[in-house]
Length: 124
Image (cartoon, rainbow, N blue to C red; front, side, top):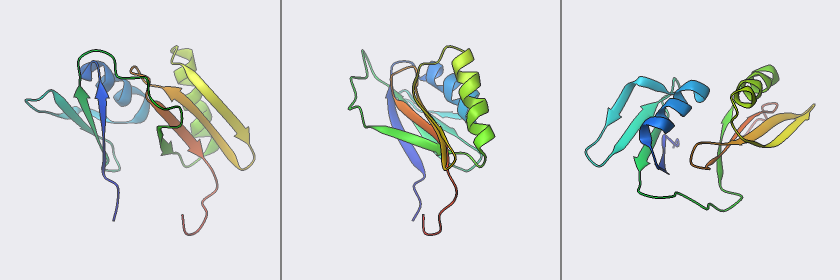
């Protein structure tokens, strides 16, 4: 069994589509649009992100609620962190230790996104 998609409420599906395409590798060109306002974008691993436009504010969200992207090298995490920070994306947490390099940022609607590297542990 494999987790294959995540649905997120967003204020502006086009804005969120641009954000996830630019920073997290989702394919904006292959976006599927539905009558209810949902836009589904897919990344190279085949994971679908369903962005559903809702009126008004999305949050506040519980502080622990987040989702994450595992990268294969610490340098990839650091490079993405640098790009997001340079572009003014809010970074809310950072770790850079020998066994883990990670950060959390906020998307345009305040969803917490963790990006991390840690050595692969068998069974995980």
